[in-house]
Image (cartoon, rainbow, N blue to C red; front, side):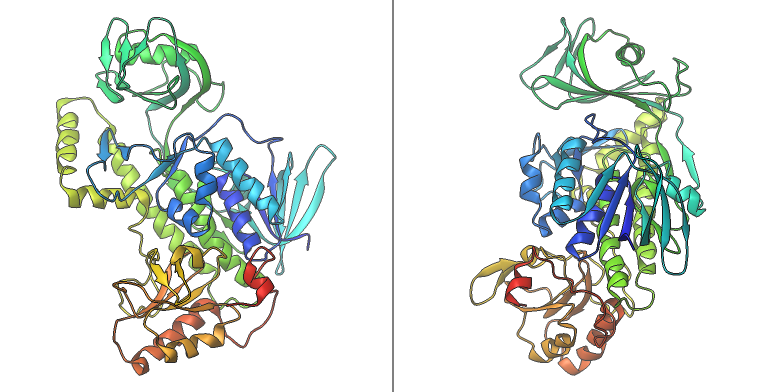
Length: 531
């Protein structure tokens, strides 16, 4: 085999997958048809639960270093209204402002640094599956060639060739609104107020955010003190007769849309990015077809901004450790199928709230406006605001756990507890940096630790104290999901059967020692032998 896993597409999802695979000791080859990394950003920020996951991987500091604003105001659009978390002590959703090229560059540097191979200008033209692997045909400047791998993952976008070739149905609908987006400087005659408001000649002062008229929606915000992010949304057919997926958007195109929506001319200067698009809503019927899997936009598209990167990169983290288990030979039966089960359900949840946003933002008549006003009023209640924020962040997703013991923590994302080891202080996040499973004893339960030690070649067994412990012990998967939890004070004889079942269900037969160690040279424990 030329690689264990071939990843098609070097966007954030594909590069995150390559990072996770290499951390798990899997040989990863990324094939990208574009000759070089895009310099025009397709997204300007990253938010939701993926930020917590990046913190658990020790990557958040590096991400902040490349951000234009690592701590933007906690205010997010939602279907024509706003989720404003500024009044909450702990926002249910956080974001960072980072142009997508910077994010991709960071992820690629880390992936290559750990041994992943990234080939740009190499386009997948076809593939075939066998019982043992996948043969992939590739075209490049030096001519066609073929590579072989155990698995193939399509991270190649919403028009995925991998998905089509695998014959995976992708039912989707296209929204009728035309959206235009521009990153531009202001032209002569327009002005900026000290608080960020915009002075539009002939119209007056506009607040940052969305302005709705009978002709559509105009939105803006400042990326820097000089650069505006401008968006317009118009109902119905494209009035310019242009194909949003064909001819590139132009500055005149954006100017014309602003004029139609606002009824005024906004002087624009230099464009840094221009795009025109329609939202789509849909999801692949299945995320796996034999040895071919899908992640990111190849698996799902959402009719709202601010969620695609979060969903796609979380796909990658969920999938990587399960592929690694298959490659290394210890995966329990059905483990890889849980990728579809868990992430398809998460995608369905994201489709739910983004389709709700689609309905909420449509319409300019009094009834539609009344709906938005009532919804915004409801968001004034903290419980409702937190609930909607958790939906957008993806933190309300609860993965079903086989043989669920009924503990509230099982299936949820692990809390980042501060831990006292007796020799110093650490945290759950630090324990998860190597992306290995962790059995964490929080109440000095030697019987439980002894049971988990049978899986010590795959699971790190740790003991630590913490204030107000939520459980006596927790079993954490590599993607930071809790697979099992021990209620405080419950006797060991009642807990041991369910603990052994959980360890076997997720991490296989402990007597199986096939494949290389999960540890890599980057993991200090690989050099010291420490657990």
